[in-house]
Image (cartoon, rainbow, N blue to C red; front, side):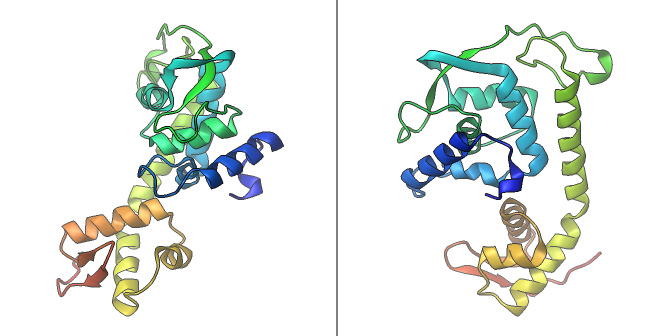
Length: 219
């Protein structure tokens, strides 16, 4: 995690790093807090803003607001995130769970504002915001994320072709090496590989590796 990515307080960063070390990477796929680092910069900003305004610190653990439940509340108002990504975001926002080995974390938190759901017509896509009021800054951050996602979709064909070339030339490449050569995130690379397998351009699996098929690329 690069220092420039975050302006979290030092204690939260240290706590995040400690918990990430202590939670086994092999436990519960998609639930490790270090998955937070697979989010883009704009996605991180949106998640962090939502947490900072939707919940607040409390004296006691709240068993009714788990990381899994909160991440679903966020998804209604933002975009899809994994339980692990949301766990990491909560740690960096300063919330430590009562049991880091649990699948779904509970925190000493409370909801800040009751939901009302009143928004200007031009922002109807930004609905059900937990703050209970329309928030222009949140809408701006979310819109920026959506713009980035659309931009990434336009790069799909280019990334697919680059992956095919790399795998054809060096089928034993690790995903970190592909990430370095393409400049794409691991999530984007994994999605592209899945897409190419479904389209018949690649054969194999994550365990044994992938090979280029004889299907010609058109377009």
